[in-house]
Image (cartoon, rainbow, N blue to C red; front, top):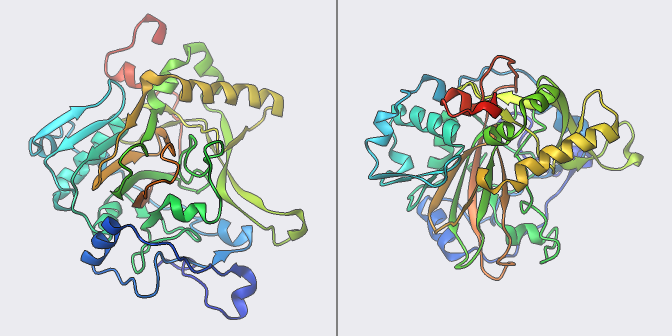
Length: 382
């Protein structure tokens, strides 16, 4: 595990952490079978829960330095022949976002196929693979191909496999109760880890346990959201920066009496994907705080409009129905997503997630939109 990311023992450092409570939930049987098959040690409980850091300054320092990132999609065959020719079927689920690959196992992909998958994700935003036989260890290994695997300082993970976050709504509900009126958690439009110095690139969520009805996930395309804006409005936000915050708050060591505060970092509102070279809108209602240089009232008007464009245009979204053993790989640089809690916790839902961190977000004025690059732009797009 990377320095600074291990759970602190009960010692002098206890004052800077909050020790986790012991979980008593019953692990869903499909999840148990998958974990035991992978040789995961469940004897000390599940999941592994690190001691939560107490102070904002400690968490801010995690990965607070520049790292080189070369996107695998940028070195891939543009036609993706190695990947697509090996599949039994390639299904584009909507015009703008979402593709399902049939007949391939993620754990068996060659290096060339992994690069091409990276490019496919960059172009189609989210790619699905059903009936996957993949262990948390293999999931992490695949994640490492796409960048530095994020090891979160406080969220639950698979024991012995750092960077494999456990996505288990029933567990989350033990800390933050959910209801029909207040679903909470991932049941809101968001993008992962926007507060990082180099935020999330490709995320791989494998769900081994799914409700019989409900539990879908929705994604929306940042390429298409940007393209929904008029060319003149794009000029207003191109090159602008915004403040993005963390999902979890922490105390300020210098002023703990002020109460919990979020980590904040500044990134561009519109970013360019390094593999496609296309512009994408990069805001989300949950964690974009304000536009730098504008008054709050001005910032709120623009951001609320951008959120609405992203969230309310159903033609740039996909709603995916999971089946047990399905993997979804999406690019956080060009999407927002939302997990539906319509099953209201009546049946278990469990999965593991690995997120690869990518480059520091950047904007390039001369970059094209997706529609321009593909020759789809009409007179009102330019």
